[in-house]
Length: 144
Length: 178
Image (cartoon, rainbow over all chains, first blue to last red; front, side, top):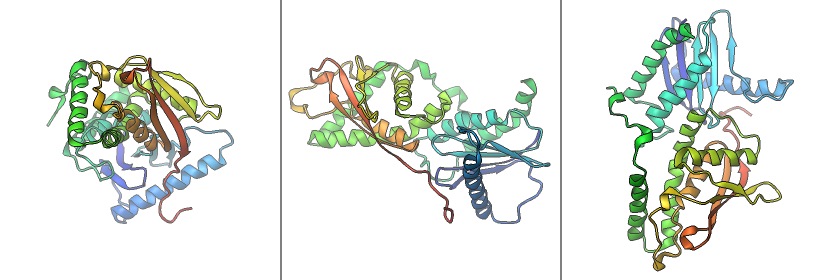
C-alpha cells in the first residue's frame, strides 16, 4: 500500500504539520492555501455528515474514497485533526492514525514541555519517529 | 537520535520522590509568596498547564471518545485519578440538576507526609488538582470549575473536591464559514 501525505491541524484549524511520501501531483497552490482549503472541506463535510445522518452519529466522518486515493480522517476529542491520504486499498489506516497520535504526537510533542502546542511542529525527532512509523506500516498491515 | 534507550520505565518512578517533589514545590511557593491565596492561585495555574497536556496523554492511552453527559465525565475523571495517581476517589453528592458532583478522597499519595503548620491554614495544598481539571476539561470543550470543600489536612474525615459544570465551549469555526 502507498501512503501519500499527512496533514495535522490543531483545533483552531492551523496546520501544525505536513509531510509527504509519494505525492506525484501537486495541487498547484501554495501550502497555506491548500491547508486552508483542506480544513474548510473537512469542516463542511463534517457538519454535512452529521446534519444529513439518519442515525445519531458519534464518530461522524472518517474517510472518503475516490478511484485513485482515499482520505482518512481522525479527530481527537481535543479537536486535533489528522488527515492521511493513501491508495484505495490501504487497510487499518484508522489504527495507523491513532498510533501517530498516541505514539508520536503525544510522546514527542505534548510531552516536550518547551514546545508550545499551538506552534507548527519543527521537531526533528518527531519527523524521524513519524517517518519510521509510516515506513514500517505496510509490514504491520500484512501481518494482521 | 533515538531516545528509546534512555526512556524511563513509567511504572518504576519512585512515588516518594514524586510526593516530595510536589511538597518542595509547594513549600518554595510559600516562601516566594507571602499570602496563601497567591500560592493557591499559582498552584491552580500550574495545574492548568499540566491539564492541557495531560488530557492528550489520557486520550491517547484510553482511546476514549466524547462524553455523553456529565455523569460520563465524572467517571472519566475518576478513571484519570486511577491512571495517574493510583487512587479511586468516590463520586458522590450529585446536585439535583446533575451539573455538580463531589470527588471524595480517602487517601492521596501526594499528602502522605504533610502536616500543615498553624500559619498556613489558608493554603489549599492540593489546589493544583483544580487547575488540572479545568485545563483538561477545557481542551475537550467543557468549562468546569472545582474547589475543595473538605480537606483531611485541616482535620476533616475525607478530602472532598466539588466539581461544577459551567458551559460547553463551542468548536472553532474557520474564517469565512458559518
